[in-house]
Image (cartoon, rainbow, N blue to C red; front, side, top):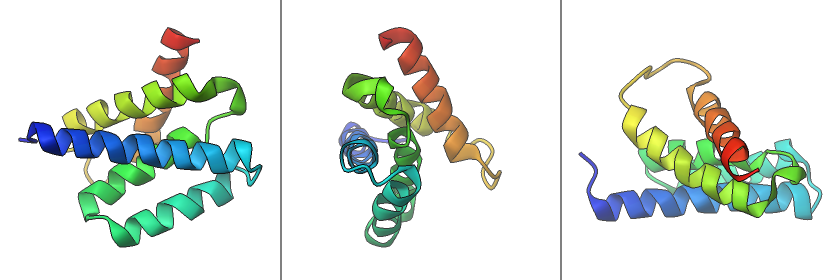
Length: 114
């Protein structure tokens, strides 16, 4: 079971990964693929494996369109962290799991926060 301090660290990783890739994607105009690589690859080398997976999933949140806005990215990344934490034992090894979790988080955040 994940302790509260671990959950806070995971939220910081999710928000940081999503915010960094969104900023690189939208505000620097690098595009979603380059932004994803610039955030995801270093995260994979620096963070622990479980944290790196979460950071990489958060990068997918940051790949959303600029119309989404910062609030949506923030809420989607927090929601992603919660969903990831609850479902990390499910579908292990299934391709597309991180992107699917990120897409669901963004869809929910857009529906709730516009």
